[in-house]
Length: 172
Image (cartoon, rainbow, N blue to C red; front, side):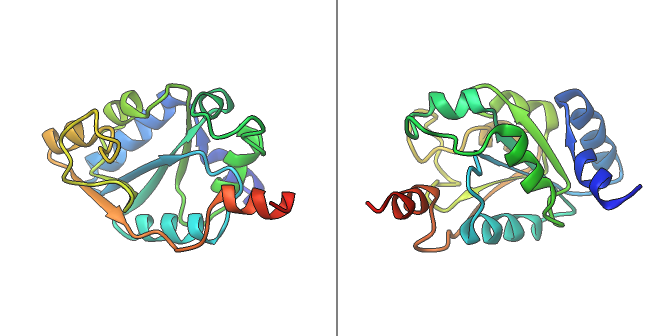
């Protein structure tokens, strides 16, 4: 299989993801899961994803669909890049092993389906927060812990955000 086909094969349906993640877990390999919009990929994203990948054997990225990005009120023009484009850019990163779209407002159902060993979010969340209504709560953390997994946060690169890039381009 050529490189381009390998990249495209990293983007899978939720059903395929469940089967693949299950086989990885059966081999006692650590499946790391994170999620996001990853609208305009920048150094902050790459650093975050690379560090997340270093926590286990496989990195799985749940990617918000265009519709779910719109529901997050990130801005009228968001996402800038459509979901297929964002998925291909993520899949082209060597340390990303799988990309899965999710259309819900949170990745909770996807996390329950995949049962990752390690759930990761940025340090703007709190891995110890148990109040599911708190803004710093990591969705899916309860389920991951109940299944013997762990929840971790990663420090974010200061000064990097998609909003900042968009504002720079607009000259604001």
